[in-house]
Image (cartoon, rainbow, N blue to C red; front, side):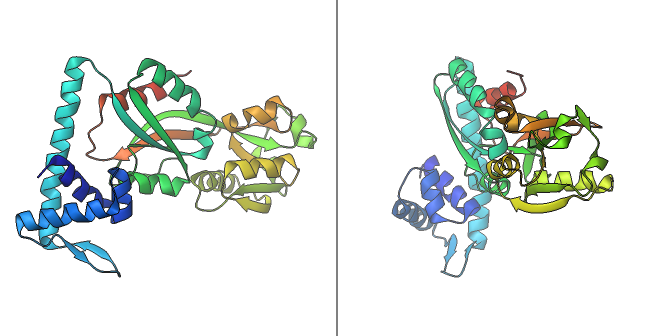
Amino acid sequence: MQIESLKAFCDLAECKSFTRTAHLNNVTQSSVSQTIAALERQFHSLLIERSQANFRLTAEGEVFYDFSKKIVRSYEALHTKLQEIKGIISGNIHVATVYSFGLYDLPPYVKRFLQDCPNVKVHVTYRRPNEVYEDMLGNVADLGLVSFPEPHTKLEIVSFRSDTLVLACPPQHPLAQLKVVSLKALNGQKMVRFELNIPTRKAVDKILKNEGVEGKYVSQFDNIETVKQAVEIGLGMAILPENTIRGEVATRTIAAVRLEGNYFAPLAVIYKKGKVLSAAMRKFIELLKTPL
């Protein structure tokens, strides 16, 4: 029995998918099945109830998972400690990020990190907010980058910055001529927004509700790029993080107006509780806290 076999079993128990487990361990789906079968033979126990309807661990499987997870974490901690003693920062980091941060702010951080740690490979995937949380809970990625982090009993949250929220509107709109706009001025104005399950949408809705503001919403979208395009063509205005529209403000296709009262979008790193962070992961998190 090898540590890799225990890790594969733990991954399978957490993501409940042979396909995903194979991807996480860089092996074939058949190899995962063979690994689980070998563990069951070795311990003379049925660890997984196999059926097309659902996936679940047996009572023996639950116990096996608990002990295997401790062994895998101890091994990872040992490996990390030995690397630190040698002063070596190496390995791989898989980062899952929401589009609003990943597309606009993350690239210079990745570039700086790779300059400082050339022996580390950073893999970045762009995901919807709910998918970032799913990736963390299923051990699909090491670190998640989200805005307006939502507390979860199984996740650690490390805040690292806040982006200013501004009113994004077409340059020809009357409100675009103002330096500061009150939320009350948005009453009855044509607005576009994110879909309901997007954390930024929930936060902005709460801000407006607290001020008694009701915009005239004409459309809602599931990603930042489409929201910006809707603003550019004059479909409506939107409240967005300032950093996400810097390019459009520079080319004057969108105007950014500061909101009276100053509102912010908090950004955070999330990862699964109990996860052993490698030296590379810890350095990456610390770098995100540093303005570039």
